[in-house]
Length: 240
Length: 357
Image (cartoon, rainbow over all chains, first blue to last red; front, side, top):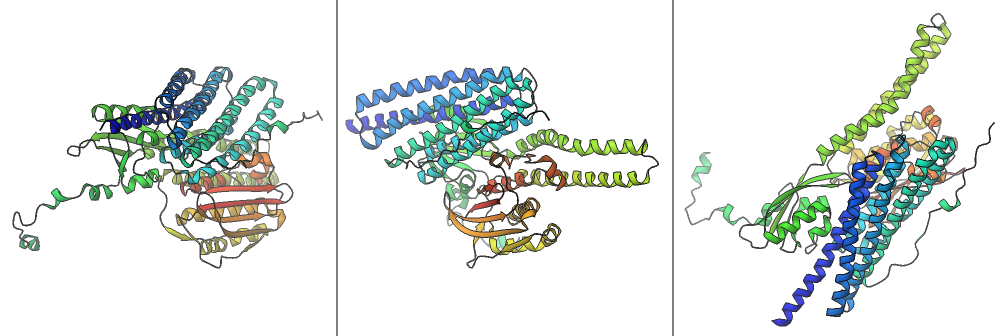
């Protein structure tokens, strides 16, 4: 009886770790979504809420780290359980970064809102956010369902995000060249786009971790990077 | 009525069917998604409506992992810890905008089980959002032709009052502008119609070969107008996918129209069907044109509403900026994808990927 009781307490501890990951995931998804609507609607109150929410994510990560280390020390887990616990630590770190990136977008809301921006400036950014959020949702759904059969596909979605980011980069540069007054807001938007692109990368990391946790194998390395923004030069038009 | 009364049932001989009705049977026929969870939040049963809405919810899947919003977390945590019931609103923004009223109640006799019920409120939400979107997008898009018409009217009443040739010319432009507005409204309406449909994967079986042949037939006048040769070989083996017939017709019509419109210079368009593998087996329909092609930086943005590679060209060719947005929306509902490959100077290929079941 004694031993089964211990096992059950251990299972309970593992379940709590998983629940905390899900809660962090939900909060991170919410923060990114709200940060972007704060940006598009120049909503300073919502931006402040996002910034405040980040504390809960940081707290979540610290809790998971501590808890995981304790479980490892006390229970000395092996195989599946060990992978699960190490995976939890990694995913928590990725989610915490996603929250930071969301918070960073929220912090830029005030600067961008100073001058009313044309709506088409945000359309691309919104589309990029939708892609990144879809990816984040898909990997977290896989974490819940453990159906890893589609995860390689999820990971390839990252290409779409990179291509979209490259395109946005070019568009924002063009706006800056059209009118120097655009430079300040567009620079902030450029950082926001970069943040979103990074969120996609973290979602990919999580996908790889989840795959490893569930199957015990690593996803193959053949991931293509299509972020070509480092090559972009928009030439100044000479006056004719 | 008479017959019913004749069927005399002795009390005790046939116990009341309702009392013996298995809970599962009852839940199976409910139109709303219903999930039963245990005291840990693990799924014990999900009814067909739940599986249709949220995908496979395997036994054991923790509900708090699948629905992660902070409100759901709080609701589940409270209910599972003290057995209290509660109700909250839950919204998903991606991949399709959906909203549910989630309520949780402990079950009376089966101790430790909870019933989680989802009331779909997506439609109300969508109507709200659509109204906002419509005002933002449509007013901007309609203002341009309207401004030009207003300008011409002013000229016709003033300086060009007596000039018959100018009048004819202006009226022609005005007519083109009004038909552009009419088309825009048509597209907006069909986009909103698709958006209004509930998020549920279409179940009807659609065979792709005959469907595309039909599209080609109805659009033959367009190909003649643009002087484009379209080649299509239906697959030897019938290839079918679960889908909504009318919506898929719209997808292929839009893609064919685009291929003819923007690939006109290439004089020919090739349509091909093949089988492939994405997240599962899928059917792939590709539209290849030999037009000028699309620069790389535009490709990821093409399905955005009102995004145009070349505003002038699109306007001349009667584009509304909504065609691919409609395509993407329909494909999302079918859990399909659109992939675009293009090389400037060589033409473009638009491929529709539809899961096969």
